[in-house]
Image (cartoon, rainbow over all chains, first blue to last red; front, top):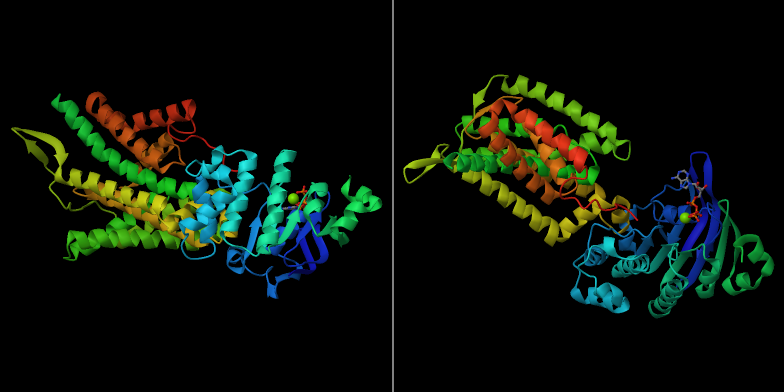
Length: 234
Length: 292
Ligand SMILES: Nc1ncnc2c1ncn2[C@@H]1O[C@H](COP(=O)(O)OP(=O)(O)OP(=O)(O)O)[C@@H](O)[C@H]1O
Ligand SMILES: [Mg+2]
């Protein structure tokens, strides 16, 4: 269980997170929604320690995360796929994947790579190509595959649907859902695309100006016209 | 014909040294976006370490090895002590620090080692090899220079292309934040990168010094040529640095042999300007986007 307790973060005078509290249960997808600038990215970055928390905490199974260095996250089973995808374009597809596997410590075995290639056959054909040549959808597969290489228990995804065609988004979310079911992953899914996100999420947390304004079951949130109109715009 | 062969051989040897020096600059540039102006005096200091050891009665090779190790350590120390504190601030800060280090190392070397010219031994003959009844401009030490640079480059290629450590180092160089999230100790990788770059710089320093004179400023011209070579190859590309170094060595050798040796510095400047005007991304960089 990922527990966020009264987490606050500022950039100078900008209070990006204000006492954010919620929990993301194990084996579930928790959607984090909200308008541009609501603080969604800041939330993920504070959890993994890329941004310093002002106060409060985020912990996974009792282990405090916000005051732990980002480079220790893979070792704790936490994978953070940053906004804008974070493919390292100067490395090949396979090097990106290997790098993901190295985070766990120890060597990367060929079977582990094959498992990812099975999941994303489009990557298998491009393994020796520079990641630079991949399309947006392929890049998203690559970063997801790279995150999975570390065999995480928690996945923090920052707007994975950004810039992808609706059909690709549907495929991606379907795959995500099956991973959650098969591997019991705990997923924090930051999305602008609220409708798609809620379709696979168990819970929805809505941020507005750095505060949690809604924390509700996903089906309830998606079915409540007032909430949807007020915060999600669909 | 013989003159052409000799000119080209001289250019090749010199080009290898420029290539090594350019490589040292590129290794640092591509990981930290800093042009390390102190590369020349750092190499100079390690050459003086070698000279001390050799003059103390030890073998050339002990001095050679000590200088390389000193280069490794000096690079790591400079990164940790000088560059790390200004990491993440404007890059100009770090560049100015390397300029400061340039001055400090010069002054220190003058105090510790003296400001006069001293001869530095060479491991192999510095007379031309005889082919039939003519002597060509390739010396034993010249061959050693070429081989030494090739070996070091080969080892770097092996490290970066084929080892996990090399993959981590490249990841840290290309995208610090993503690398950190994937568990790469970025700080350590940057330190190691500076250490390796400094080692390669020291090698260039030793090869320039071999069989000639050293004083605290003997490397300063080389940094200019190394920089031109690095720009020629595209500052981001280690392979480009090597090719750039060779091209520059050959061109300057041709200028020196056929036009006049006093025009070499001018020719280097002309090449630099031409590259910056015609192909600022360098001859070999594909000018890739850096982030998505
Ligand atoms: N590095 C920074 N320095 C200063 N202010 C920042 C920084 N990063 C974010 N902010 C501010 O913090 C607030 C929250 O930003 P954040 O990026 O977390 O929003 P977001 O919900 O991810 O938005 P989007 O949907 O557009 O990605 C915004 O007001 C933003 O301007
Ligand atoms: Mg965001």
